[in-house]
Length: 518
Image (cartoon, rainbow, N blue to C red; front, side, top):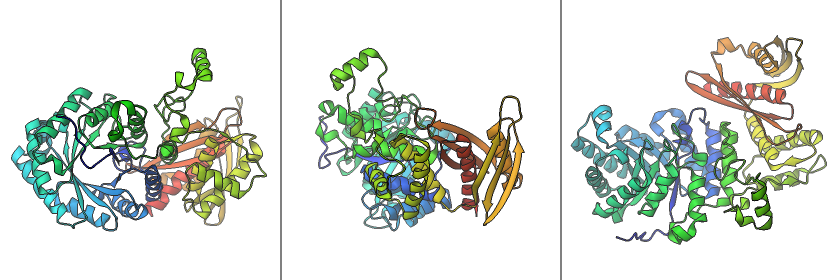
């Protein structure tokens, strides 16, 4: 039976970076960071944003509320178990959304029913229908999506039965997840085709897929699903998510676009691809998790050519070794004709060109101040430098408990490294000194004495240094993660002096812990 998309003429993108993506270790975000990411996703023109799991924590509830008010065009979603209190919490968090959706999930595979739920198929069916009906009772404008968790390992006929029932109960989207990244592409495509052909009321609902990347096949299985009738795909920026991650939004979107000749015009998305790269960079700056250099589409090497044969081909005809343009995803990596005499207006104009159109006055002031400092130290300033500075500026405009005033380091191969620093705390200067196994160790020990780390009960989880550009004058971007009671707080610092960036990143992480726990 040929695929007929009906009235829908594009593949909807359901972005779950703020929910499933945030479940990646070290990728938790605070409310301000979620709002910034949601606004970028709106510029990217995603159809749907899953903002969190309302019942899971007060922080998730507040973040969903905030995102629901911050964006206007996308549908905003809260995840819910098939439990009334979950659904009630989701609706309370979504009340102010222009386009609210409650996303209900319930496992359907034999292994989940037997060992996790300890329920019969009949009990699962009953609970699913009741949950969808309860969600639909919240109002006429409430959209309901139902997910059959571990669908790829579920009985096909049971899936037909439960999906038919929830559609009858009011679900307008049915989601078919490959929860464990277990399915092979052709196998998963056949499952979607089977459901589309055998669910009698399927014309009343969209078919969505949510595929994990445990075997590196999330994009492939999602594309197979689209070929067989799925009209919505759940994905994340940079493919982040539980375990090995989710279907990568940028890879899926560009596969459909680059191979338009294969997929056709009705299997395209409405994504504004020029914001793909800015969205990837923003997520990296928020989480501190760098994209692998050879990552498709957004990796540092995605448009790099080292082989002489490749370079020769590119010079003669770009299409010999490039199937897409870097500019198509918003990636230019050009040098800025800006220096210490450049004005604030020029900086703001360039930031808008990069996609940063919602900065506050304080963020712009801080970014301009740091730009001027960098221009005195570094001759050539790239867009990557500017993005790193901007990330650091946004971090530092967050209310600070501790701020670095001065830092002095002594180090070498014949002496024990030591650090002396001054930190501002409540308008008072606190001085501290310490020695360590290396200069960074000495700095962190000196900061520990200022913040009374043992009393705070936090411990250092990660210390990551990343050179933003090439050269000895490169801007160093440092990410520090600290942990307390299983919660992770991420701090950032950017400076041509990586030791100064290290101190700022550590203090920023501590500030986040103190402000979020206050």
